[in-house]
Amino acid sequence: MEILASVVGSLLAEPCRALFTFLRAKIGNTLHFSANLRALDKEMDYLIERRDHFREHLALAATAGLQVPSQVMDWLGQVNRLDDRVRSLKDKLALRAGNSACSSCLCCSKLSDQVARRLGEARKLTSNAEEFPQGMAGAADPCIVRSTYIPAPTIDDQVTASRNLAKVMDLLSNKDVKRIGIWGMGGVGKTTLVKNINNKLTSPSPDSDSFSIVIWITVSNKTQETELELKKVQKLIADRLKLTLTDESMETRASKLHARLMMEKTFLLILDDVWDPIDLDLVGIPGPEVHKGGKLILTTRSYYVCSQMADHHLKVEVLNEEEAWTLFCRSAREVATSEEVEPLARAITKECAGLPLAIIVVGASLRGRNG
Image (cartoon, rainbow, N blue to C red):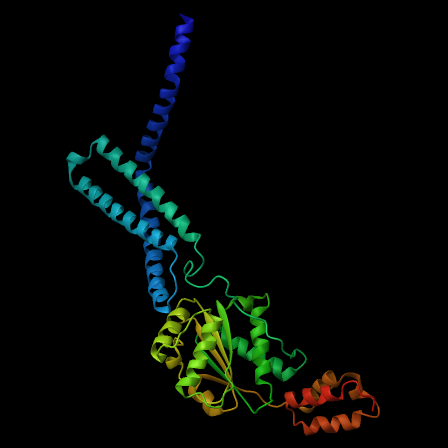
């Protein structure tokens, strides 16, 4: 008899455990119905917001000619299907609230189970979305380096240049400043200044997190108004973004560039050595009215170019006598301060008229000489 009871008990144990688990889940879903419904609403709000954001990126990716990863498309489809199911579930809940015949325990239990099930699906989709890279999974090449170091002379020991660097960094951090023009005569140190700015944004620091990507373009050509020259500028920017531009019309190329840059949360475009005003709209650079996170720095010898392309201007002045001599000594090294050479070296420094480029070149030519 004891053996029979043991056998029967063991046979009933597993079904009883399964029944207990089932009933506990049922009761739990019913008890937590209101909390689950609120959580479902919150998850769906987040998913719909992400879905709409991804849809915008899909349109931009298509315009830029970029491939959209299949997992993103699958995710969007799953969100759409879940949205339909949740809407249908909400309709049933509204019907139950207005119909006493639907308020039975069985009906409540079924709806509670559906809410719990949909909540689980929503949380899984939320988790999947958070695994996508920031912005849009796969839309931009993950191999693109955010910013690139450019070799440049340090300006840490130049008071005026350091002050100018600090001014530009302050302007970059000002959300109301979008386009900065740096101008001054040739050789005065404009390019060195912006190279130091670029490198400051490249090195690990709070400043380096300011932009999703920093794009450095050396323009240089003295005529930039022709379509051929504008296409060259387009190609240089596209190459930095790893975006393919073919022999299409200016408008098509501009549309692709515009769409690709719109996919960046923030960007800084540095145009060095601009000789003539460039129509950035024709190139495809989003304006500040459509891309709040896009900024521009340009260097030029011409105040006119600055006034046409930038909303904030900074003139780079020549070095004062003390700064010029310090830079000359750094370039020429110990020969500059030797008793025989120093008087001549100081005279040469004055002839350089405070232009850093001239001072560096002449100083380097004296390096290693002993009188």
